[in-house]
Length: 399
Ligand code: LMR
Image (cartoon, rainbow, N blue to C red; front, side):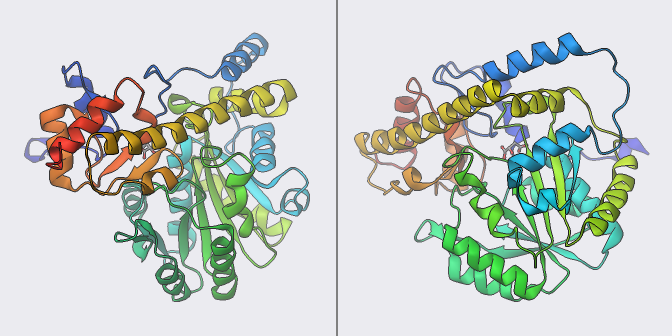
């Protein structure tokens, strides 16, 4: 059976990391995968995480299984972070939260749940979206549709077209929205636009699935909840897949969550029981370590303050690199207007470079970015920005 198999294509994002790791160029730059780098180009463990991890290990007496949804304290910490501890969704027990292995795990559990319970439902993804979104839902057996999002000419959100398309999504379908720091464009709706999208969801009866993987990396922990909070109304049922890969730097601990919000606590309990069946058939129950670190940090006022400071440091560095990147391109004689990059938020920028230019940057300059022209701005440092911008200028024929 195996002898006739052909090689599958490399993953468009993680496959780039594998290629980058094999590149021996001393100048190589990895702007592919969304992993934060500090000013020295490292991805350090947060100090708050180190401290919490030491405490967790000190207290640990067993490696017994967690329950299928994970630890209840973790679920409570996730809900408090998402909605605020006093929000009616939390106090009214309208939310069911399960600990999933990373944001991807949460998205996939949602896909399994949709496929099993609502086999006719389709999922609507923004065009463009994270390259793994269609992959996850195709593998979960959920039909994928797209809605317009990005205007190439203005490098901005194509809001009216997006809103009109969402008006024609039928009741019972699911619309995936990026809670903040849209991946790959870095462009989010304004608070007023979020409110309009929520009005459409409420009126039409489709279910928002908010992918919340970059909480804190846009404008702040509080500010980045604006999109999510727009959907927290009594007439909207909701799903949220959240991740601590980026905002805790816990990439390889695979710690995320899926939260489903119902109209009533009874429906939330039924949701939980159904999602547990999906999880049991998939990975059985989640890994404990990363979640206990997150719980420790979020529940300890000192560690939480320290963590918020560390997230702010990342966010500020990324925004500084955006400005530096735009300035350095200009200094290198690039005439094309890249000023929109400074207005985008989160790790990513949709640079507007085409696939031929992306290939040339990789093959001739050892600069790795996703084929769509997506750049991980967090991979830019003071040390590599000159080489990066000189290379882009050369590829654009403007050096
Ligand atoms: C990305 O978009 O680069 C990240 O979300 C990492 C991944 O798994 O693709």
